[in-house]
Image 1 (cartoon, rainbow, N blue to C red):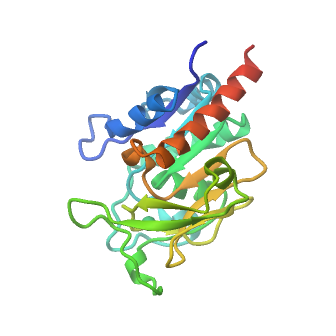
Image 2 (cartoon, rainbow, N blue to C red):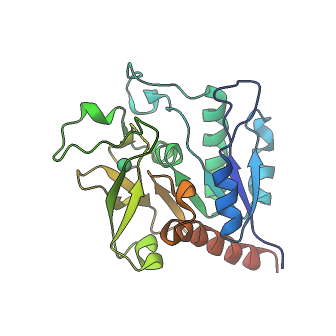
Length: 241
Ligand SMILES: [Mn+2]
């Protein structure tokens, strides 16, 4: 039987005339049993529904900072703005795959995008936000810091992993502030930073702030991709017997 087809968003940072995608995303999808395909975002937006219809699952990947005008702010001085063309394509694609109830995993920027799409807001620069303890969530040296993340045992991820916590890597300066419509917080760092959300009324609309793709040789993190692929396979079997 054919594997479920899992779309992965791309970037053009730092070379504007080349698509870029960290290899780990496609490798993690493949290791989890999916068939990975990278999506070019300099696309005619009228083609977005065709992309969405062909996909069985979707990974919204990491990247730079969304335009904060979505939640009534201007860019923080430390912001690295995302390519506006990427932002436009991803918001259009997200709306369409959501409409078709395609299973979705958002990672880092992907989590922020899913929150903005649902009308939520972001913390633009975590070091500005007083917290106790003040964990470092950014990757400042060669290695990303790791921190514990508490999981909601009633969430899809908590039930799938059958765990109440996971040891996550951390490579972000932004995080969800106010969760958007229908989104529930499912994962939290010890300093209260939101590390994961889901829409419990959707087949899989789940986002994590850490980078499980970079840790897919660890069973817990590979399992996050397995959850996506399992839901995508279920949808594929139901739609196209
Ligand atoms: Mn973190």
